[in-house]
Amino acid sequence: MTENTNKRPVLWVDDEIHLLRPHIMFLEERGYEVKTATNGVDALEIIRHEYIAAALLDEMMDGLDGLAVLEKIRKLRPGMPVIMITKNEEETLMEDAIGKEISDYLTKPINPSQVLLTLKKNLDIADISRDVRARDFMEFYRQLTGRLFEGISSLKEWADIHDRLSYWQIEFSKNIQYDLEHFLHELLEESNREFQRLISKNYGHWVTERNPDIPMSPQVMDHFVRPLLQKEKKTLFVLIDCLRYDQWLSLAPLFYDRFESRLQAHVSILPTATPYSRNAIFSGMFPDAINVKYPDLYANPDSEESMNRYEEALVGDYLKKEHLHLKHGFSYHKVTDSRYGDNLANRFSDIQNNDLVVLVANFVDILAHKRSASNVLQEIVPDEAGYRNVVRNWMEGSYLRRIIEQAGEAGFHVVITSDHGSLRVNRGTVVKADRYSTDSLRYKTGRNLVVSGKTAVFVKNAADFRLPQTHLTATYIFAKDDYFFLYPNNMKKFEKIYPGTFQHGGISMDEMILPVVTLRPKR
Image 1: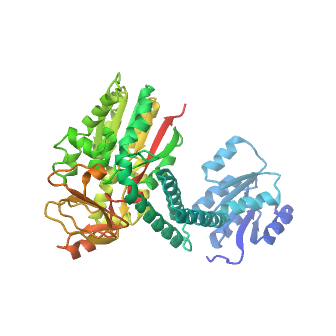
Image 2: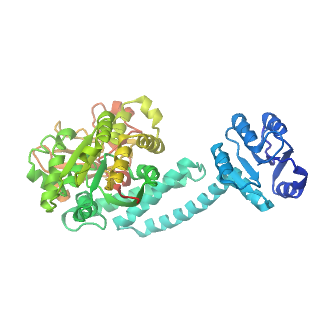
Image 3: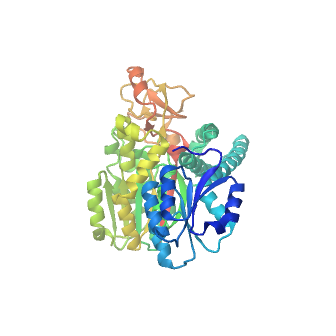
C-alpha cells in the first residue's frame, strides 16, 4: 500500500453519493483526492487494499450502517481518522460513536467548508500547528535574545524565562522541529550563562543582606505554607526531591480535574543539594543558622542521609518559631520506596486529622542516581524528555497521586515543591583537593580546593554564602555550565562514566529555579 504524495486520498461513503458531487469537487480543488463508495462493504474493500488518509462516513446506510462500518475500520486501520455524518442528533448515537473512537461528528445539512475544516483538523493539524509554533518560537527567540543583551537582574523575570524555556522544550519534544532545535539549544545555553553571571555576582548579597524578588529556600514555608496554616486551612506539604520545573509542567495536567492550580517558583540556595536546600526549606533558616542549632548535623559532609536526619525536628522548630500552634498537630513522612508509599496511601485516613502533613517523596532523585549506574535506565531515560516521561508515568499510578487526591477530598490545600533540580552534565573539569573533600560532582566542600574559575564559582569564606563552616568545610566550589568535577586520579575512568548523567549541586536554572504549586480542591 503506497501513499499518494500529490493529493491526500479520502474516502466518502454515502448511499446517495451522487448528491454530494459539489462537495467532492470543492475538496478536489483544495488538494484532496476523493474516492467514493455507496455502501459499507465496498468501503471496507477499498480501505483494505488502498491507502486512505481519512474517511467520511454516513451514519444511515442500507446493509452495514455507519457504526458497524466504523467498528470494522478500527480493526483494519486503527489510527485512520473517521468522520461520522448523520441526520440523527440523539445523544445515545453520539455516545456510541465516541465509544467506538470516532474522530469527528457532523450533523446534516453540511456545507463544504465544514467538511474541509474537519479534514484539515484531522489530517493537517500537525503541519498547521508546527507552522504556528515555529512562528511563535521565533518571536520568543527574538524577544529573549534582546532581553539577554540588555541584561536581566530580576530573579522573578528569570523564573518567567525558565518557565517559557521549559514550555518550549516540552513542545519540541512532543512535536519535533529539527530546523529550530539548534536555536532552542543556543537560547538555553546563552540564558544559562547569563543566569550564572547574575548568581555569581549577587548571591552573596541576597543571602546576607537583602532577599531577591522571589523566595529562596528558607522563605518557602513563610510564603506558601504559613499563610494557609494561619487561616486554619488543613495543608499537605509535598516535597518531591530533585523535581525539575519542566517535569512539573508535564505532571500538572494530571491534577486539573480535581484541583484549581497556581504555579509559582522559588530559588534554591547553594549547594543545590538535599542536605542544604531541603533543611533550609523545612527550618526557614540558612545552613549556617541550622548548624548553630544542630552543631553535629554537618559534621560528616559526605553523608547526605546523616545531614538530613533532623527534618521532622526542623519542621517542628519552624512551627514553634512562627507561633503556629496547630490544634491537631502535624505529621512527617519520608517515602523512599513504593511499598511504604502505598501503605501510607492506604492509611491516609489515619493522618488526615492533622492540620499539617509533610511528605517527602524520593523517587525522582533515586531515578537520577540509579540512572547514572545503569545502562538500561540510560536507554529508558536518554535525555530530559525521557526523564519527564518516566516521571509522569510514575506519577500517574503512584501512591503520591492517590495521597494528593485523597487530601483534596478531605479538604486539604496541597503545596508541592522541590528542594533542587538536576542538570544533564557533559564535561569534566579537574579539581585538586585533599582527601577530606566531598565526592559530589556538581559541588564540593573542603579545605584546599583548586579549580578553574571558568568552570566553577569558588567560595573562600563559607559565611559569605551563609554556609556551615567546620574543620572539614572551609571552602566550597559550585560547578557552572554542564561541567562535573573530576579528581586527577582515575580521571580517564570517570570521564567516561558521568557524561550524560543528571547531577545536582551546582549553578544552573534547572538546578535552582523550582516549581511551587498550590492546589485547592474544586467544589
